[in-house]
Image (cartoon, rainbow, N blue to C red; front, side, top):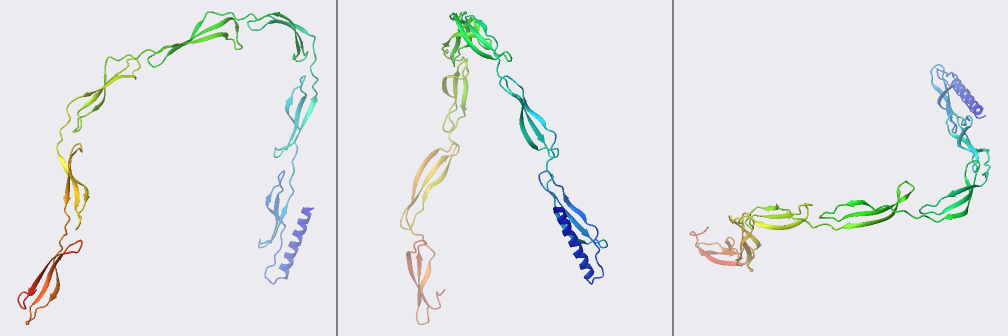
Amino acid sequence: MKKLFSLLIFTLVVISVALACVSCKKEHAHTPDNAVVENEVAATCTEGGSYDLVTYCTECKQELSRVETLTEPAGHKNAKPVSENEQKLSCTTDELHDEVVYCTVCEVEVSRKTVVTKKATGHKAASAVTEVFVATCTTHGHTDRVVYCTKCDFEISRVEVTYDQAPLGHTPEDAVIENYRKKSCTADGCYDEVVYCSVCTTEDGKKTEIDRETTIIPMREHTASATAVRENTKAATCLRPASYDSVVYCSECKTHEMSRKTIIDGERLVHSGTYNVKENYVNFTCTEDGHYDSVDYCKDCGLEYSRTRVVMKAHCVEAEAVKINVVEATPEKDGSYDLVVYCVHCKKELSRETVTVVYGKNED
């Protein structure tokens, strides 16, 4: 139905284009060609596809119309059922399998159902049998009446009929030494004395252990080596003489230090000279003293030889003299000026001299 509707729309579009071309006054009237399929997208099992129906002019090849058409999903195509997860028949479980259908195109699982082919019949009891168990080291002797399944040999029931004999108890072998470790000067030694049963074994086939006792062997004392080694050798300086450590270690473990003695190996060096620096410098002012430390150090080791506090007295610093109060000399009257010296820092007047100027003689 959808394809028929799309084709009807396409036909109407083609007719309208043809009429338009006839009615227009252009030199060329389009002639529709047969529709062609373009941009086709194939449908999958679960998703629809699409394609375009396109009409071109037979002469100029101009596109006259284009209609997009959608298609339905193709749907899965079932393969023959296959058998999976097969379970064999037993006395307590059914014979069954999964019947699975896959798609032949996309291989997705379409359906799965469990099919029971035979039902479990349950155990079938055989006649009771007598089983005799002799006494062991740890279990008593007894007689049992046992019923088994005739098909799978499953034990359905067991009843102890008689108690025949008490457990025999273990028969000890002679003790053996295990896990022996020699003592040293850094660790204790030890060993285990183990007694096994001469009759029975464990589930993994080993002899049954009856008793185990661990004995500790105390470590021995360190033994001093006959030869000392030389360590921490230091060259002589202005501050200390040459020296080294004479060290004796344990002759066995080589790590435990038995003794250490520092040996003086020559005199210390003589200071070769000094250099002087000023430290803690505080400058003087016009009203307060200044000071600094004059310090002498050794050129080699940097040892302080001497330190002297030097005081700088408070005083003003004279600036260059300046002229003030200048009176020009005339023929009728001598001139004058004051030559004044001030402090560079506080501007205090330190001295003043009045100079007389005679007209025509000592004028600057």
